[in-house]
Amino acid sequence: MRTMLRRLTLVCSGVVLVATAVLAAQGPASDLTIARVRSSDTFKQALAVLDRDHDRMVAEIVTLTEIPAPPFKEMARAKVYLEMLQASGLTDVEQDEAGNVMGLRKGTGGGPLIAIAAHLDTVFPEGTDVTVSRVGDRLSAPGIGDDTRSLAVLLAMIRAMNEAGVLTLSDILFVGDVGEEGQGDLRGMKYLFNQGKYKDQIKMFISMDGTGGGEDITHGGVGSRRYRVTFKGPGGHSYGAFGLVNPGFAMSGAMQRFGTLTVPETPKTTYSVGVVGGGTSVNSIPFETWMEIDMRSESPVELQKLDESLVSLINEAVQEENAARSTAQGAITADLKLIGDRPSGETPQDAPIVQMAAASIRAAGGQPRFSWSSTDSNIPISLGIPAITIDSGGSGGRAHALDEWITVDKVPSLRGIEIALATLLGLAGG
Image (cartoon, rainbow, N blue to C red; front, side, top):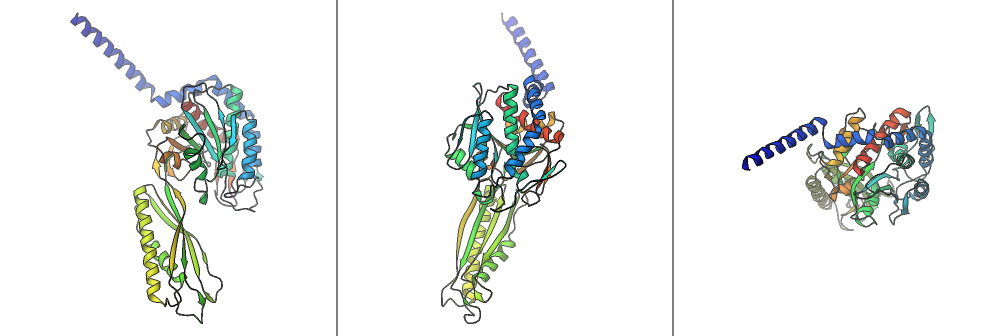
């Protein structure tokens, strides 16, 4: 009996070893999943729908781009996008208190809730001409690539999945979010993950942002802190009150110190003075000057060190100016107001969501590029939720400039959408 058991154990062990060897020869689980997705009839039908309706997607890019969505004023675009989500066949389409618009594509059950988002806002102020110009396959307008194209891509993906009859285990939440750019400070994502209806329910997150041929995978969230630093003093006539303390000198002393700080190359850490202002006239000592600064790092520890250095050097600059000139009419003070706080973190490269995107890129004949950046994914990553940011395909350039552009040549455009769709279905059990 003991001999028979030993033989059975050896046979079973051999089966396990053979099975393991076969799986190893076939590749990682993510590659097998993507291969299964891409070989399915429904996926091929979805791609055919995307190909047929490409001109419709381009028209929606133009329509959405020409609806201004300046910082904190995304309402007009959000209204139209909400209607587009409703027309696409999603359920539970709604707008939350932060201004995000969203809708569910229901799955068959058994999979985790996945959210995929593109941001509604642009960096351009109210009054910017957002008329789209087209020369061949090149479209130009402020905000067209960052991130309006991605909004239209999400709509195209929903329609293609519906028409092809694609089924997923997971429910998929499609989101057009607010506040990604600048002083928006990721307020849309902060609300979605910390206060919104789907708080604690979203288990994976994909942000679609920008253009890059579909091969970029941002898995690291660069943290940032932004301050508006205001220096105040008594002010006075430049000649008659000469000798009084000057907020401008205090601010320049702080800027000089800030500019000489040493930060590590790895983890990458940066700082900048972006905007300055103040004063009333050329012949007046200003009673107030201000600057807005940006500090970033891949490491929360290094970002905190930089923050502490900033506070220290501002105090030094204020003390220096108060010691250098008269404070008879009042001393210089400085006030730091936090105007942006983005957490940092990383979804490891070996995480299933990263590997699924990488497998999808390889299956399409590409080579994945892994990177860090500051995107909507920062928020879920900081909460321990697996998240990545991928681009929406095609090519483009001059983001955040008035001559921002994208190309809508069908082949590279569809290739990027194909990569994104396969990634999403691989994760959702498509």
